[in-house]
Each structure stands twice: as structure tokens, then as C-alpha cells.
Image 1 (spheres, helix red, strand yellow):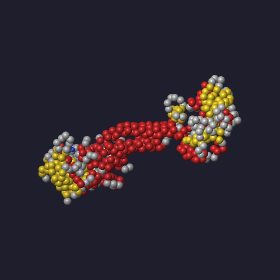
Image 2: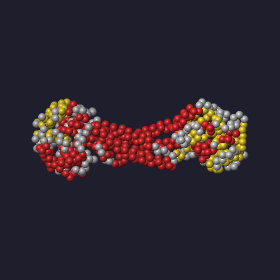
Image 3: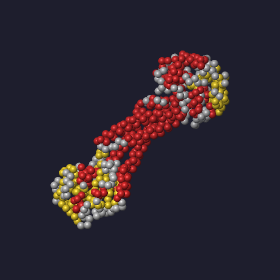
Image 4: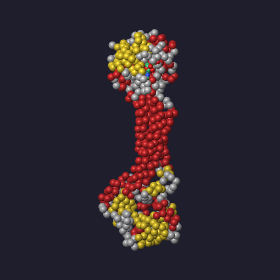
Length: 408
Length: 225
Ligand SMILES: Nc1ncnc2c1ncn2[C@@H]1O[C@H](COP(=O)(O)OP(=O)(O)OP(=O)(O)O)[C@@H](O)[C@H]1O
Ligand SMILES: [Mg+2]
């Protein structure tokens, strides 16, 4: 070990308690920042990559004119034929939907609903709640009058598996269309609004009900890597032309994009605040520890130690304290992040999800352990240590050796 | 040629809220290679101040100090540090060893600054320790040594890099009479054996009696040589 590093290492152990306190303060600060980064990363990362809590796509395609006015006559034709040629990234999950707004009626009453006409197998990959049936099962492929409802709607309309429910919608030709369906299953969604509003029928049944044979309103694409959304959207736009509207998750759920930026700001602010507080404490300790050894530094200078080397010895001390703190804080932070990446961390006491401008965020957050977060946080600590070392060192090197030697 | 040249040096301490106090008021002095010289004088006469100026630990108010013909006032702080490292050894009244270093590491400190490899450092320190009767204390921390032993380590630290001059400010003041006398004898022997120039300050008649030459300071002026 080089002289300055060795001297610095031995010096920090002269006052074990002081070193231990500094180390714990920085370590705990680091742990907080790492854990918090992991939590936010988990919350947003999950929300971005797992849009199936809300049944949304990273990229969605509509016929131009459908969105906004919700004009059910603005349909996409022959989706099944052209979607095979889209050249999507491997392991993408894709499904077409027929969409309608309407009324569900049972012996108990009526409720406003959104009718989803889907391919059962496709939809089960897109929407987490279709994999979460509390009662019954997915309807078979030839079951044109089967319907799935959410727990909340079933509760309000008094529906059980086998119950009859009437769905009424406004057709593409502006007439009213209605048909009788039979409940085949009841699903659970972490979002109560989904459980209350969404009902699922086969696409054939929905097309019949709306009078749009062979058509669909929405093509939903969930990607393995959300970062590819822009590229996929661009290629779809080029391929499909102006009759179609292609939107990415960032456009469909601008709130997620905004939160991403905001959370990075919040983490940066938190880190700055934590390290500022910790830094001031450590600066004070460091200043005391260096100034009470002024005379010893005077001796080193008298023996021919250059000012730059005195600086190195002091910085070596803060370097070692930083290193010990990083080892302590990063390992505890990583451990905590790892633990909560398995068990998840329950945010708040409310429901299973938060609704945020159309985005469904699960409140059970599995933290994401990201080595970059740790490196960034450790970088902060070293930068702080450097700053905290420079000032006491400069207080010494400013002195003539004779002056330093006179101090007791 | 004189190793140390002090030419009409003054040093005035200016402290806030106090009248400027002249500690040296025009001191001139030549010290030849191989001298064993004492600075005497009552408390407050300027002995420490003069030694500090000779060693480049402080800056003169006016006048000039030269070591080996090099004017200290013209050197930058790093160059001054290098000059001390290469040409000057110090022994302080209060031993002033670094507590976290062993005796041998303390003595080797200047060699390390000079970039001497570890093995060579150890060999040189070992030889000097044996000469000073410290052979058994190489790896002992200063805290575990007596005052006399610590001061011998300080002497070892000052001479191991073979400086042109060793400056010692009241080196025996913290030692009992017998230990102090032994230390003076040792320094005298090193002076004779190795031709190292010594300048020490003292109040002690025992120490003065061993010097080749005594320079007496009173009130910041040299009164008799
Ligand atoms: N840093 C300083 N600031 C102000 N005055 C000082 C300073 N150092 C020394 N003095 C004053 O300068 C004068 C000479 O001091 P110096 O320490 O050189 O004397 P000395 O001969 O070494 O005394 P002693 O025998 O007590 O060690 C004294 O009056 C002292 O008070
Ligand atoms: Mg003195």
C-alpha cells in the first residue's frame, strides 16, 4: 500500500468510535438512497413492462377516427390477415379487440359497461385479470354467448356463473343492438374500476352485436422490452399508412413518462439532501480530527512532506471512510432491495392498485435491484468524501510548518 | 563553504490586536560543515524562531537564509519541502513521532518520501537503530517507549537520510540529566563519525559544555560568538 493510503488507513482507527459513527451515518444514507431507487425502479419498471394489470399495450393500433369520439363505425378490417406480417420483436404478445360502450342488465338492475370482444387465448396473455378467474372458466371458442364479468359487477348485478345478463350497445348503424349472454366466469382485477366496468365476450359475438362483421377497433401489442416501443411504432406507421393511428405507451399513458422523469428528479433530490446532511456531519468530524492533529501534520511538513502529500494523507482518510461506508451501505442496501424484490413492498394501506391517469400501478412493489443505482450512489459518496476531505486539508496546508508545530 | 548562512535576518510576529513584536532584530551567522554548535539565550530570546528560519519552517521578515548556498526565500513551498527532505534533519523538544507508525517506520519516513525502496529503507534504519542502541525496537510503537528511547528514534529519523545539517530545538529538555547527557554524547559521536553539522538550542549548561561553539541570543540579537 502506498504511504499516504497506509497512513490514512491507520489514522482512521485512532478514534474508532468516531470512524464508526461517520461510517454508519454515510452507510445508512447510502442504504436509503439505494433502497428508494430500487423501490421507484420497481414501481415504474413494473408499470412500464407489465401493462397487463390494465390490459394495455406498449403499442396500440386503431383505425383513424375511433379514438376520441369512440366511433364504433371506425373499424379496422382483416386484422387477422395483416397482423401476421407485422414483423414484431420475438415474444411480443398481440391481440385484437372489438370495443363498445353499453349497458349490462340483470334481474337486479343495470350498470354501464365497456364490452370487450376478444380472442380468449390472445386476451389471456394481455390482461392479467383474465388469468385471475375467481369463479368459472374462460368460454370455449364456439361459445358465442359466453361472457366474463368482474367481481364488482357480479356483486352489483347479483351474477353467478350460469346467470343470464343482457348487453345493450349502440350499433355501428346507430340502431340499438342487444343480446342475451350467460356468465361463464368471474375475474379479479387489482383495479376495482376494471372489475366493475369491463365485460368480455368473444370477438364474433361483439361483431354481431355491433354489426361490424370481421372487424376490430384496437390492436394491442405488449413488448418484452418497453424501450422498443418507439421503433416498433415507427415501423408500424410506415407499414400501415395514414388510415391507422399507432400510439406508444408513452403517448397512451403520458403519466408514466412524466413520473419516470419526476422520480429521477426526486431520487436525485433525496440523494443530494441526504448526502448534504451526512456530509456536513462528517465534515465536522473530519475537521475536528484533522485540526487536533495539526502539530503532527506540522512535523510531517518539517520532515519534508510537500503540501500536496499532506492533502493526500487527509484525503486518504476520507477515502477509507467512504470505502467502508460504501461496503456497509451498499451491501445492506442490496440485501434489502433483494429481499423486497422477492416478497414485494406494500405501498400504503389502500387497495391492491393505484389508478394514475389511466395507468394501473400495483401497490405491491417488487423492488428492482439495479447495480447502476448502487454505482451512482457510491459515486455520490466518494464525491462527498473528496469535498469533505479538501477543506480540513487546506486548513493545514495553508499554515507555515512552524505555525502548525506551535499548535498543541 | 558555510552550510548555513544567515544574513541580517529579522522576524517580526504580527498578531491581530497586538503590537508587532520583533523576535529577531538583525541576526547574521555562518555555520561551517561539521560544526557542533549551540544556540543559547534566555527564554524568549529568539532561539526557536532562528532555528525555524534556518530550517525553512517559517519565512523571514527581512534578510536572507541560505542552505548550501541556496536562498530559501526564493523557493516555492514544494521546493522548500524537498530541500528539508534532502538536506535538513529535525529533532524536536517533544520527540514528535507519528504515533500510528512503528519506530522503524517513523525513522524511515524521510527515506520513503525520497522514494527509497522498502528493503533498502529497512536496512538503513536497522543499521542506524543498532548504532543508537535501538536494535530491539524496530517494530515498537512510540507510545510503548520511554522518552529517551523516543528521542533516539527522533535522532535516527533526523540522520538516517544523511542530511547536511541537523537542527535540534532543546532536544534534552524533556529528558532527565543522565539520559540527556547520553543523547548529547551520541549526537557528538555522529557529528564526528559522519561529519553531520548540528545546531541545537538549549538552556542547559551540561549541553552547552559539549558544544564546539556557543552563539548567545538576547532579545533577538546575537551578543557573543
Ligand atoms: N508565532 C508567534 N507569534 C507571536 N509571537 C511569537 C511567536 N513565536 C514566538 N513569539 C515571540 O517571539 C519571541 C521569541 O520567541 P522564541 O520562541 O523564538 O524564543 P526562544 O528563545 O525559543 O524561547 P524559549 O527558550 O522559551 O523556547 C518571544 O517573545 C515569543 O513570545
Ligand atoms: Mg524555544
